[in-house]
Length: 249
Length: 249
DNA sequence: CGCACTTTTGAACAGAATCAAGTTTTGTGG
DNA sequence: CCACAAAACTTGATTCTGTTCAAAAGTGCG
Image (tube, rainbow over all chains, first blue to last red; front, side, top):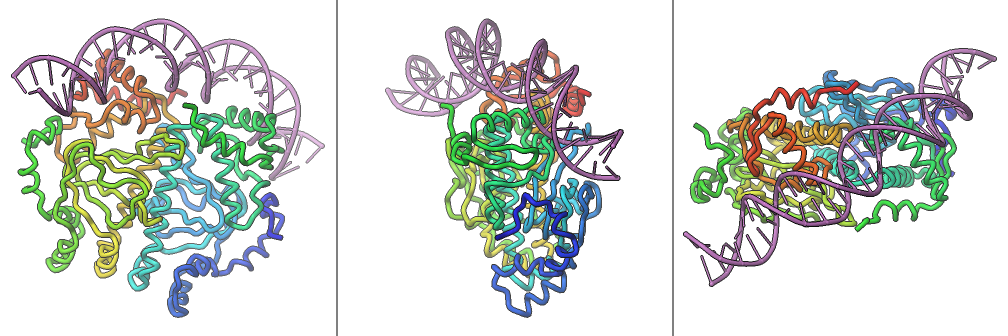
């Protein structure tokens, strides 16, 4: 049985995590690339040992100089941009296997904050060195282009959500998306812990925290989900799916 | 005097445009990269002659196989994604010098439609070949990473707009953004033609077309802008800037 | 164990959507 | 070049969704 994501990582113990991680970070990332042993060695040489980030700490902040991308080894992050006048927009939630920091390449400075929402661990991928290596390993080069492209596609999905969907649809889509991502990682997908506050969910979805809370309560009343603080159980995922793709016309 | 963007390209004549373009496309794109003559030649060899796209035509559509990025040589495009249930979200407006199609790299299929909003011309950059060449020309490789990163940053800006701003702020930000982009290209920045319908603006900004229309009228009443159909004059850009960065707290 | 943070819920309010005409503009074909 | 049809735009009235304000209850961290 895989570790349920509803169990805070804290309980597992950081020592254990560190052990499980040390420098295998990109091995998984690279396995599907079909690299030779020598190429693997070269990638490994670049990738840092896992670096732990405690809950609440920033992995990086907007404005800081850029030198590396980060692969989330374990844990959970939010990234957010802040406008001049102080409005925060959460741009994403990131879990094991996600690559973050790609926004920083364009200006050589990070453009958003990355905050750990639970004790986490990342692998640092020094970008300049990765770029150099990518020139020798075409599939690695292509992989980075792909990851960035995927981020663009994801962002377009969020734009669709923010531009077209009503509160209920947004929340339903959000829950289903989380569920799916947990499933992909082999975690329980119909019962999971939200790592973020209602306010952070709201910021991501363009809603106020009260609306998030109300909508979750409503879904519970309707029997679609069960809410216990941050523990969510999807009782009727199909009902949620129907909500999302339900065209009111 | 530069050609005012308020003059429809049609009036200039396509023949003239074709002439002005032939294969110089990436030359400008690459000039800042400090390439040698030989490198320039290699890039040129890959880049297609300008390809004309008539108003209303699709450069590509979601689902089509991906093989090239496109640099807008001249004209104006919108890109948009459509959800399963038929909701359209305009994800961007693109003008001379913009690079589009990067969303397609992740899945080898285009994920959005690119429609010309006026008679336009693009240069095709076959991606696989560009990738190969990029391995020989580090600054070219880095340039592509940068362009993709820039797109991610831009998308985050739109997310902030969609998630946090009121209708007036969105429209003001939109007008200022267009103005700035025209200015960067040497066009008149305080008087320009909108190439898109109110509905397309609305789709981009997460508003209904009526709201767009009303807000433009309101700005006109307040003396911030002058609206004549699709011709916009910014009478008081500072008023608009103030609207955008005005924190209601 | 207590204090700060988070969450829930209610009531009033505001902003944008929707519905509905009516008008203007644009593009087309004669 | 004009006439006509379709598309795009404006404006008003109404409705509704989500915000704001407020207060109380719950949770969890130090």
